[in-house]
Length: 83
Image (tube, rainbow, N blue to C red):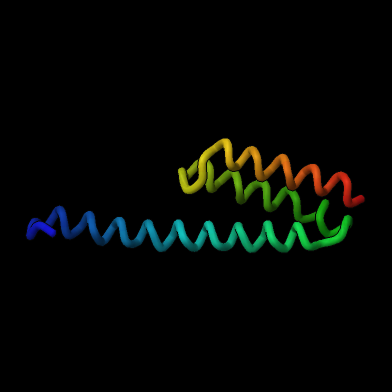
């Protein structure tokens, strides 16, 4: 690593972003896991919240937009068949 103050700052910022992205990603993965294991009434109630979380991940660039669309599609399909 270079001994420039800008480089040191960039390393600090990247570390913060990485930790934040890991937190958001893990929180969303846990919410998806809970949604998949739930029953019909629970699934349809939590679906909009989880879809919003997935959209935020895609907007921030943590996951790809196609992966977000794929996840949302699968969750919606499960929610409709679980009723």
